[in-house]
Length: 323
Image (cartoon, rainbow, N blue to C red):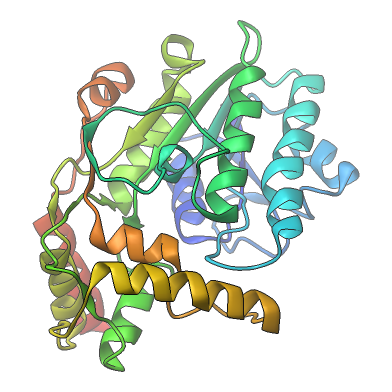
């Protein structure tokens, strides 16, 4: 197939583009800067640039849409512009170009209202109750994408949960940096069960969705390793792989949530550009269970994880040892 990948300069996007090239597809990318992925043709531009978007989708059979504003803080208007209006523009252009397959890369946070998730399937995206501007706008964009689904323009939403692996600067690097600086506490008892997704497994699920979209379009799927572990164990595994001391000091979960709300307000009022040390959403993620039933995902996508959590941690450790 001829496939457009948006956001291919990011960790997951670049790995997806690389995998598609390796599978024999002809890949084009769209992002602001060079993707640095061998074998692809880059179109440089923004989702908000109609000319760049039209150029990117022209002649494509499929789209894997990963580009998004991903942050714990920032002006709401920026999230709306990139995540909602950018997705709307891409859907419009792809439909006009007669693209037939569209994989929207979403997030489980689109259906998370702050309570524990224990063995649930993919619930409906809910912008009203989503926590924070990222989750809210990803939920709005997912609803837009699925509403565009038809027999001629097939759309599926895939929600990979906490993707990590060697080279990850979002989850792994932040955990390691905070642990090294003794700024990574355990919230509450640290026993909340959390599932994650090793990078190879996330890529495998996205490519399976693209290839099998004729039988899964119109639906949303959460993707994980299917191996929930206590959050303290997960953090310790990542820290040990990187050669840093795992967190041992604790903060009451309720206190962390309240502090996160105050820090968010302070960050907004002072125009903080970097990531705040804590937000209410982050505190909830670190202190409540969130793991998902994977039976429908694996059956419908005809996909299973290829790398276990322990093997992923071993690969992460090897990457730090080689650095």
